[in-house]
Structure formats: structure tokens, C-alpha cells
Image (cartoon, rainbow, N blue to C red):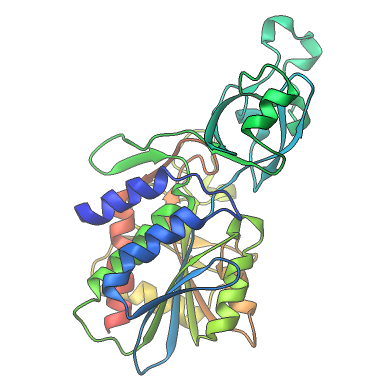
Length: 342
């Protein structure tokens, strides 16, 4: 990944934008991609749509801007905040995490609390937690003090600074799917001085974590012939995973090309052929069900769309420290650029 795109990714990863609150991410996407497209628009659901005009088939490339997070649902008399989860979160990972809450006058830092192990009954120590077992401590004196800082409906996200674990391996919250947003910018940059046979739309979509709502409305507005989602998938190269049950996907071994009923066979095979002919590292993933990505809704939007999906291997998805490889992102940029130019 070139240094400019990498710096954009690092900035995207520090933004706190759970589903329904994606504006910071989509605004930076619009600003970053605008030199390489003809226009950028925003729809009613907050999707940012960057259009590079052409005379051929309409092609949508889409990555989602949102992340999992928390939504403040109750404030007790002592000023502790209770929450609902936005998106798929492993509740057992939450105790002790720092979170950033979008408060009335800016960001409020909180700590997710839980009774310490010393004070627990033995029977409670290993139980699966529910959100109502936890709370957020913002060091408020009481309910009135807390409500001066936050309100019901305020959103919170993990506090997690991006960490380069090596020259190519990065750890951070929200790599799902900010790395996909960065890939869109990288592809647009690659194509800025070349002609494409396609009429291209690059979409930073909203509310993917809540059922790919943005993907549906953006696709139905554009009415493309081809739609390609870029997202993360589960890497399985760590202890306790099974290649038979969980798949055989590794960091750094290439972009993932999924196969299954959610993806058009001809389009997926085109990706495989391009990767093989151009020696682009790639991996194959078999998904028998509708995927948990924007591809799910792209495929069935309107009268139906020829749909593809490219994925980046990601360890520890939906945690404060997801891990991915920038080389896999480079492979995705190379594959998409080759497909769109040839």
C-alpha cells in the first residue's frame, strides 16, 4: 500500500463511527477519492457515492464505513451508563475496555465495568455475560452529572490506536471494513490516468453491521450491471481453528476470492483467472450461505445484480484489536485494477 493510502487508512482507523454514525469516515473517503473521480454525492442513508464516468456497463465497488459499537440505553442514579450492542460483539471481551462516547460537548472516555473476580460467587465467574451485566464508568458523581456529559442514544466505540506489528501486519479496531474503504481509494488512484470500459461507482456504504442497509439503497439507486463488495473475512491461521470447519485462510497469503451462491460464478472465475495470469497472490474461500457482507444485499437489490466479493483475511474480527496484512490489501487493489482496466 503506497504511503498516502496507508496514512488515510491509519486516520480512518482512529475514527469512531458505529453504524448510523459514519459521517467522519465517509467525509474523509469523499475528500480522499475526489481527485480521481468526476463527482461525489451523498444519499439519504449517508452512503458516499464517487462516480468515475464511463461509457460501458455500470460497476459498483463497495466497502462499508461503519463499525460495531455501543448505544447508551440507560443512566442510573449513580451515573453509570448501560448500553445495547450495535452489531455482533462478543460481550465477554468487553469488561475493562476503554470506550469513547460521543458526548454533548465532545468525546467522553469511559471504562466498561464488571464486578472483580475477588467479589464474585464462584458460580458467576465463568458464565457468559450479557450487556446488562456490564456498565460504563465515566467517573460521574451521579445521574445529573452523567447527563451533563452524555445522553440516551449516545454512541460509543473501542479506544484502540493502530499498531504496526511488522512492516505489513497491522492491528486495530475497525479494520472491518476501513481497510476496504482504503482499497477503494487505492483502486481509484490506480485508475486515475487510464481509461476503463466501465462506468464506475465507488461506494462507502453505511450500516453494513446492521444488515447491509446502505448497500441495498445505494445499489437500487445506481442500478449497476455488476456489483463488487470488498470486506474482511475470518483468517483461520491461529490456535483452536479447524480448516475443515472454519476454512483455511491465512494472513499475508493473498486476497480471498469467495465462491458460493451469493457470488456470480462467471465473475468469481474471472477474478481467479486474472489472479493466476498476473501472479497475484490469492486464496479461495467457499461460502455456502448468503455472506455477512454488502454482497448479500447487492445481489438481490432491484431486479438483481451480477455480484462479486473480494475479502481481506482478518484475525479477531469485531474486537478492539483486529489484525490484517497490508500486502493482502495490495493484492486486492492489484486484482481490481487489472479487472477494471482489462
